[in-house]
Amino acid sequence: MKLVIWMVVGSMATWLAITMFLDERTGWEVLCGMLGPLAAVAGSWIAAKRVYERNPVDLTAMMITAFAAKLVFFGGYLAVMLKVMELRPTPFIMSFTSYFIALYSIEALFLRRLFSRGSQ
Image (cartoon, rainbow, N blue to C red; front, side):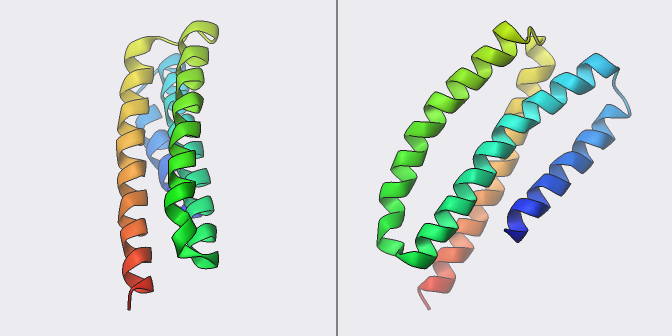
């Protein structure tokens, strides 16, 4: 849970820093680009950690299921943000892509750390 708190705090801090240089509309689009990846990574990290601590053998199946769920989630999220909310594609997609890469990289590092602790 500590990692999720750090990811939220870090994401919000970077968003606040970025918005100091942007107009209100672009700041909103950057925030919307951050929220989807943050929610997905936070949810998958919490689920993965719980499953791994309970029974590490079940983690692969959970990760495959989570991957399929995230495909559906991100498809819907992008459609809603771009078509329904009518966000401008450039700032939204730049933010979405940046946070997606950064947050999933952090999750991968912490999964590696979790696995290395368990193998000792």
